[in-house]
Image 1 (cartoon, helix red, strand yellow):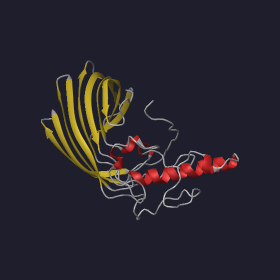
Image 2 (tube, rainbow, N blue to C red):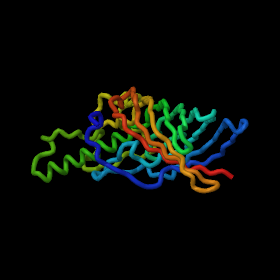
Image 3 (spheres, rainbow, N blue to C red):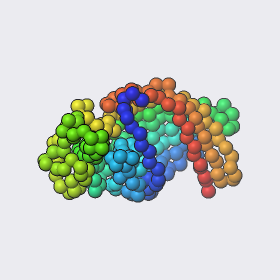
Image 4 (cartoon, one colour):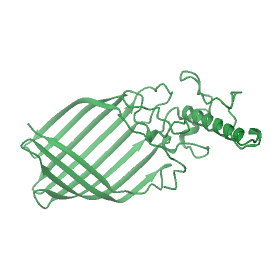
Length: 268
């Protein structure tokens, strides 16, 4: 996409682990209310790096590095061949990880419905809205990555026989060595711009747009099918495409893409 230049990195592995308790209310077997209180445990890596040694974008990290509270409320029901669902969920991050940043809190609302035109297939339509806050401490990761890139440019200039003083690289501040990509210790004061500068992330080189606050909403249509897997198991597969997609904040311009959702349900 044109709004994200020069990103070439990947990550894989275990993400954060969600544990909690859920309470369910059954209303005449026609509608159900679920309330969950979950805690996200920091089991996923948040220190993934690209081939040059810089930390990859927050969206590419496997975990947050913090203990997070993730409440959840859902109401769903069915009337004849129609089903419906509404859900609201959030994620509240606590403290900062040992890289001295904290991901922004999130809230998402989902509305959906479907018409079962046969026993195993339904047409679906839905809408969701998601809002997230900026990353606190993003200047610490940006400072580290800028030092890594500066060291790489100096190394490349030396290898090519040119003087680093004639290059256009950014020199590290406060008299630090241009060949040392080590960050300041997580507990020390950041040497980058003052807090608040990164709320928009519009005027800095090498900024990570995923550190800024923003919102996204989308309407989609799809096809859902149920698969009988035995007396207590049932699988659901849904595929669809957004018919309307919009963002505010630095992510404006994100292309709409089709989606695939798989679910395994059980009853006892």
